[in-house]
Image 1 (tube, helix red, strand yellow):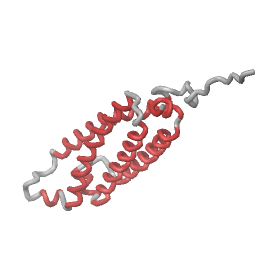
Image 2: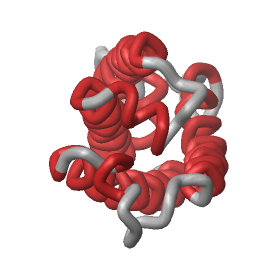
Image 3: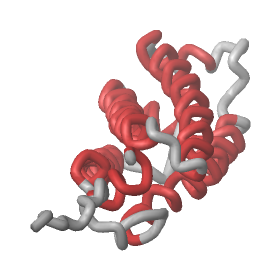
Image 4: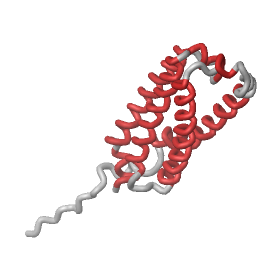
Amino acid sequence: MANAEAPVSTQENPRLEGIGGWLFLPLLQLVVGPLYACFEAAKAFRHAATIPDFTGPGFHETVRGIAFVLFALMIGFLTVALIVFGLFCLVKFLRKSHATPHLMIIWYGASIALTALVAIQMAIDPDLFEKTVAPDVGFGMELFRLAAKGVVSGILISYFETSVRVKNTFVR
């Protein structure tokens, strides 16, 4: 008598496939994140228009340290790079690319790093940060943002590494 065994499925749970469940949250972040970053940048530029003339004598009182200016330039560049990378991740996500989980882990790590740089910039000179960048944000709020982003990113990074739905949707 021949042993008739059923073929073994390569998927751990075939019902957990496609963009649904917890995968909706990263998708939402990839769609809303760039819009929110553009809104925040526009708000910062509107506030920057109230800063005294950069060529006049008030410039040195406004920007006291080269570290602050370098951090501001680096943060601006990294924000634009993160927006572009996020849009790239969005395309890969919607196409269900094999590389999506790794790209998302990089995106979350870069988001944490950028938030940490903003907190460092504020720590360099909190009064100057509030005067030139964000008058409505205090140092405590930046630390809270960093902690919240770290917790959320940590949860979603582990989700992208271990989830059956992620494996079934992107990897297999």
